[in-house]
Length: 322
Image (cartoon, rainbow, N blue to C red; front, top):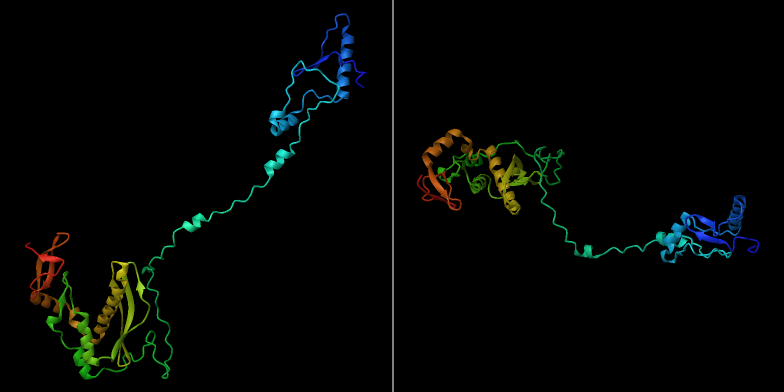
């Protein structure tokens, strides 16, 4: 087939304009020249000689093997043998790009070096919506079972105590037993209430029974208690006590119990004078004085109340001239 082609001895390759005859027919007519060019182009198509690869094949070949791309010049001759420039398919490139990567192994260093879980914070309650400690509905008492004082009202106002017990409960308080706080509030120490109850009912014949759970808020502790004497419910009161540090909560629970005892004793008439304004004014006039003191740590001066029979001011204050 190559022998029948007249293009073999007279063609050259030009990368910009394709196949162009290397001679110029000076004596022939233009029609003959056109016929020759047409014949040469037809011959090239029959032999499937592609002088320039397609854009897609060129791009794929460049991506597959950039260094193997042949460089042709304008002086290279046109051969009948099929061109060896055959771009490799891009399958290898696609395979390499889509091959799954090895799964990464999670590191155990972070879990090993992670700090231990902190201790849970102190659970406190908010008193905005109430205490949420309503007592359960009492049921009829079975004489064969012990009385549950957390819910029972057994013996409440069933009968009066003996005249001997009432005499101890309603006896006037001794002014020497009354204490005065620095802000001028008068009070009876908690041990005095216990002594009066022991005189009236006898040791072991009375007690405080909790009526609900201890409620701890951000600043105080509160709980409801019932005063029981001779197997009868006498009074119910809620005690409260402030605290300033979480470590002081156990001490605050005891102060809450003492506060409830003092409030329950009001129903029995114990030290009832301390809630009488007339008695308070008379007592303060006879047994109290107001002095200037200075705080030992802060050096701040202020006035405080104290008993007249006290010789010196208690720490952390010291008496100074106003």
